[in-house]
Image 1 (cartoon, rainbow, N blue to C red):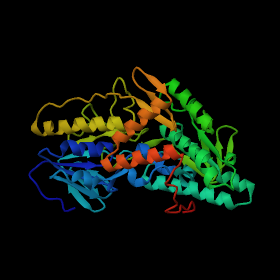
Image 2 (cartoon, one colour):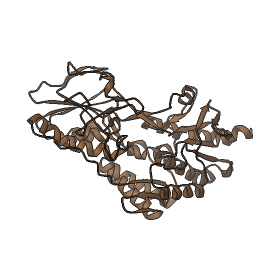
Image 3 (cartoon, one colour):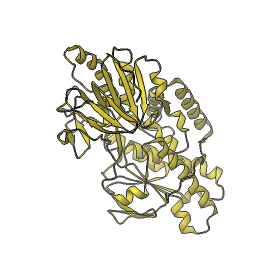
Image 4 (cartoon, rainbow, N blue to C red):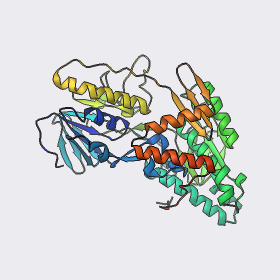
Length: 425
């Protein structure tokens, strides 16, 4: 791997997500050598992936080069590769480009899409966890519009213009609202030979309400906002199968659709090699203690979505969102130097800063500890929080100007089919 030998303790971090980059920042100027490993050479701001999918932003607005983060820290290195397995006894990890030893290992690999074992849905649906997947969705939506404009078969046109989103959590709700804005503002202007009312957006949620992890007040407001935008919401609805043409559910509801976007769940993106006892199989997450140490290992840690720390407040682990990952990484950045020096460690205590979701223009919901509200002010808060959380000044500026342009012109400027998507592949 061509990593310089050093007398400093070597800390290897697997994953350049929220946990990984925040840990790098905390350790970058400490007397340690840090090696960050990721399959991609950029950090993805996942909360805004849906805007890339719906042509609101270009992908480079929400991606940031990992080496650009690391360049300010002298003893920090990056390698782009996939980790295959961990040998905890030898303190080594095996990757596609070689083997690297470690003194301390941090696993921050996040999650991947969970299809709950349904191979047909996995084969034919569209996931949205990565930038390339978001670009595939963008291309497919626009390709469907182009194909619908030239087809004379009404049944085929209807299937092309039916968009089914499975999963009524924040990702599904936000994407449904964004696609509805394409229908309301872009389709009538760009595709005058299509009837906008022929386009239908369906949001299918398995529980009794959308945004089930948020308050009932937020769920009701979000459902009302979605309905106002023209989204057809079906709760208590599970998708049983999708063959690329027809969606079959647990109810009598059957939908003809060329596009099913799967936002119904995630599962841990595990690395092979650790003892099976440290895994919580139903969630594919590593069991960790209050210091984020993987159970049974004093020098291996797990952070964020891949870690399950059971507490009185969170018996099934902390929410798989950005804040727990960031807070755990920041604390571990303080604890690792203490561990190396033989000092006592500080226990992790999660500070819940609230949750929020946007449904579209001037429409969002926010749940704070003592306040719950929705509408324009919630939408403004949502924009500010996400803008400031973006990595890199350039990305903040680009996203801000894109949002201003979109707001003033009721437009989504990134509606380009740069890389056509072929569903048959």
